[in-house]
Length: 286
Image: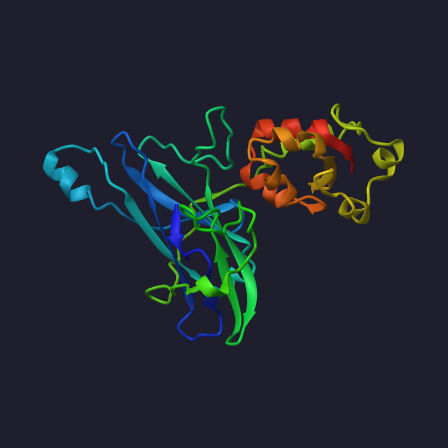
């Protein structure tokens, strides 16, 4: 997970010392396995960059004569300010000594929402009295604290709780080659793309021949932004989620946050391959 930049922190782009942003976090796997690397991505997971990894337990493990590691590992890197201007989110992941790593997307399970999918921090541009700046948004907050892009307060900056994001310690980003570059297509998008070959309404909703043939305008979608008629747009396809509100594992409120408009980014961030398949049951038009 990532703890720097902190939630609701602000990074002032005009400050001379802010040539780089500090990005840092921790990693743990359990079972005595060792974290062997930690990486970040600034382009939605298409490419990954190595960070500096610190394992405080290395010397202790060596003294014990074992390779078992039971403590958190710490990772840190710096990102050039100019690269953040086109960045929508910072993602992180870790790899253990068995070459296991976190899944890209959240997978729902019948016992609850516990998961270890990639940790994402959203990057939002803003204007301040000191000039242009960026503020950062974590998925949720601990305990009863409010805020986070996975909550009802998504996208809401709290000026009263704002802190200053830390610049990089050196002021110069490491010049490392990308550790991994993804050139394929999104596996999660496959069900929707395949379904698009046959423009038929989903089996759990009603549509019209005109909608299926000519498509549905964004102006029409915007009219359906309530619990009585909840439409969303995912990858240029319109879905009527109204029948599913009462059954959604995350509650109706998490759907209602996105109704009446574009919801691709929100849907991709937290849904499994199975959920992408279920989505087609609610398709009403392109």
